[in-house]
Length: 242
Image (cartoon, rainbow, N blue to C red; front, side):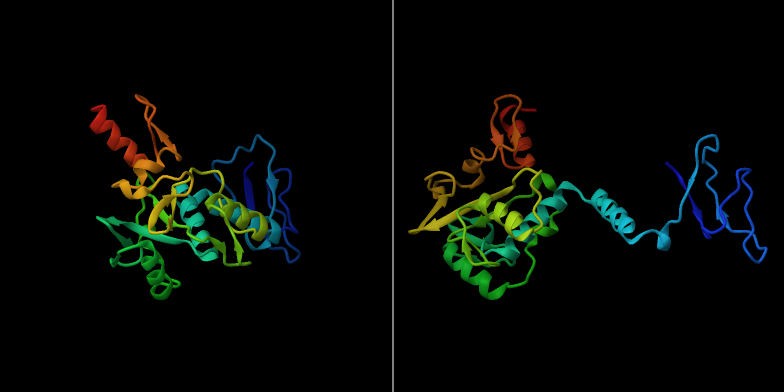
């Protein structure tokens, strides 16, 4: 339904479409929309500053949600996780070394990377927030000895953490999107999958194994699953030549 902007709600438009005069005889200023269908019922109500605060808040919330993309939802989730837990992101593995998500420093093991991140980058923003591409967005996350830093409760797994943050602390977590966060643990000198006992050290890319657990994107030809869309497109191009 279309609305007219009425500057003075005390002096509505008459049925003939003419403006009623205000108390001092001056006509009420009324803004009309040329595209408005005058054959239909017209509702005139104040907007802008005169709208009820609850209505204005709802309108602003709807407008904000419309501007969000799925990538923004992913960013919201990882921001909440990093702010409310002791999880540590990793940029990538460079040979046998682990690269920091905040700078270009590399470390021999995830434990050293965790100490570096905690000491050097408290409050910093990881570089993956600069990549505005959903098809390439992936976060490698060390969840060794995972805990909620709001209530200091130990958490068993990433899914349990997001459920806990949303249900217990009403944190900003979007549940309607695919998971593009790849969790792992580092125990007894081994890089371990959090969903099965596989040692991830044998994989050049952790995604090569984790795609068995996170089939966000599935190949139409061979039913292989992938964590991110760019890996699916790369697979189709090299394996199926399409």
